[in-house]
Length: 534
Image (cartoon, rainbow, N blue to C red; front, side, top):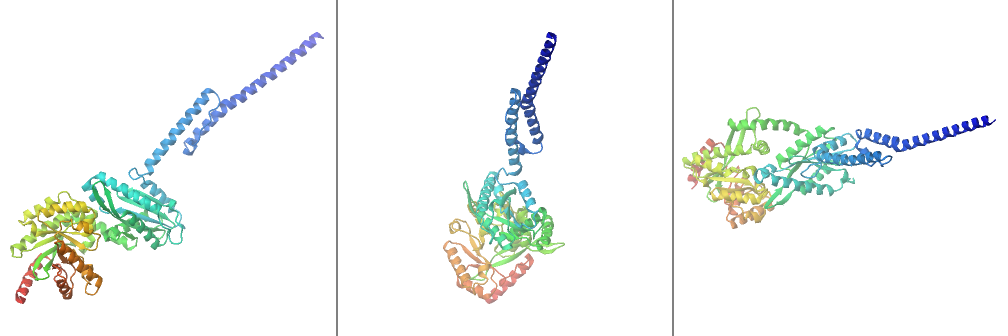
């Protein structure tokens, strides 16, 4: 019996020991699962997802378990924070323009692609190119150019934040995007606009924001830009088509000096011609496909010939006659304009020397581009052309448009002053069509101003034009300047100009532009006629 009790006790002890052992093992397994398996599984799962989406880096893993696992979780959290910063830096580099802080070309194209996937949601694409930016870079240095780009970026950002509502639509400005897409090119995407008129008003809003004077150190620059407008889906259903059409419209706006232009299908044909002319213009300069015509200027009081204006023409071997309004903007946009101006300058002075040798003692006027004004060796080139033809500096007058002078008036005063000190005549062309301040007019070393034909042509029928012409003549005379009236089309206009004491006149009533040989013959006839009438 005792043996039986001992056996039962032994069996009970074994059962209790086994139960305790199993309980300990279970508790150990639970503890191991919570302190090791679960933390390891969480870390493993988080690491697996990191390669799939950077969103998994947002947030931290709570350090749990053993000291080693807590240390591992802490290191992971530190790595996640560093990777998050790295991702933000990479995104900044990939999608933000470092100079202006605006979205860059990558972000712009990404946004444009997304917008162009919803044909039922219209939007406007504005492509903007700064005017005369290269001249600023070349003349004042890239550091000034960079400051100018930053200023433009800031103005465009302010313009975006103040966009007016589009018609009856409430414009969501946060969905708009303004970006710098390269060089001096900017772009804007404005959702919810499908009406052409509203698109033009939006473009004008940006034009107004960018235009105007900009003070950069000691430089006062007049900012301007040209904007091409394309409307989705009317002008294209994909990113590339919209960009191409907006670019065509922008080039047309720049060439026509309209500020902004909406894409039109007719521009496609013109763009092909533009590309052809661009590649042919250098050859035309080298192979003398260009030629000059001269339009005389007369003294209004005496009728004497007092000068001529040299006008460049192009006879293209395939396209025939190409007008200056077509190829001059191409020359200015592609930097061929300096070579073109030098060709005109040397040819005009050669012809001037020829007619002076034949007894016609007057000079020639040559038009300058704003880009020529910023060329560092322009004075040297002019002096070489004068010396080559043994001409006095007073035989040359340089004509610049009022808008060209006002693009950078302080610099223009400096450069034109150096030219005037060399006794070269300075004429302000198209006077009255720009925004020339009287404070700058009195500082300019000009010898004459030319009243634009838009005022002269109808002055006998439009009292406002007559007032403008009369006032301009009085102002110029008070400042010691000679006045030339352009666009004189009839005898009545010439008579009225004489009554107003205008100094000189130029226009079809006097003579149309003509080649050199025709000019020589015309001069002989003109002098013979006036000797008889005298």
